[in-house]
Length: 286
Length: 136
Image (cartoon, rainbow over all chains, first blue to last red; front, side, top):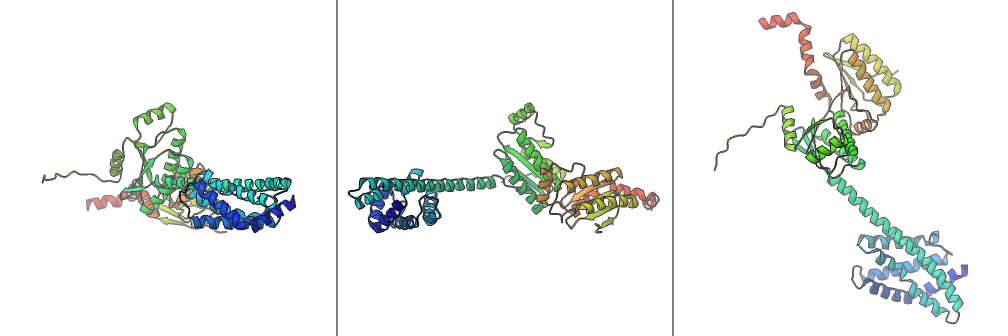
């Protein structure tokens, strides 16, 4: 069907303006006139894609993965990515390619008004190649959404593992959320770097915000504590809630470290270890 | 053959590892160190690994070995200046060096060695002299 694609290419390049006009109108109707993308931009996207599509067909490409379609795929990728980032739904994104079928088919029919067999065969070729391109659009859309999710995950991990300085040489690490291997890695790196930066010799790991402590979480905690010890810093674990303490005992989780019930108790112990005392002064009532 | 220098500081020995250590060098250090502990009667061994960027299980075992040998010869081992990446690697390898004391830097390591029993030992060294000063 080599000649079929060549014929399609000819139709596309000869009747470009009609196709673009029809296509654009369909796109505007489909989007319900929300105006999230400017009309001029849509027209430019249509025109660019159509000429790349025609060039690809003209170069003898018969499948969407053909190198001749590289520029067309690249354009589609850009369109799909920008729509994914702007919050378009998958349907709205895929419509960009699929709505090209109608105007294209119309022009094919107009080119061969008497030859139904020819129209049917060209229509089939066109549908196939546009379907492949449509699937490609969805793949790019999916990938860009996954990128967004991954970036947000990184940000959450970064945000939820702050290391704060409580006093000269005393650090606190308030953990919030479940500790998995990936987060343990981030927590460990942050803590060790902070120990170097602040030349700390005591770190308080507060697990008030950790919803559950199972054997795995305990193992991760112990790893962090061992690494801090290798850097010459002692760790105190604080904020073990009553239910969690009970669960840990029932599970047989051994956390062989210095632990205190609250962060305040841990800070008091840290003061004691570093030879500091807290004195309350009488304050004159004003 | 290259050797890692061992410096004597009071009753402690200081080993500063500034190059990437290979197996033969590590073995030589272990031998040299045990000989020097006996020869000098040192009570503490401080190993500064701030220059060490790459660590493997052999290196971790060497530190453990040195600590065990020192303990047998009645000297404490303090490892100082470990980099965060090295600490993470050792923990991931399952080597937490439980028999070794640790400190952030050489200064803190000296305080650790200098504190506690070592000062008393220094005093014990010259009992006669100490008594005379007390009376005078």
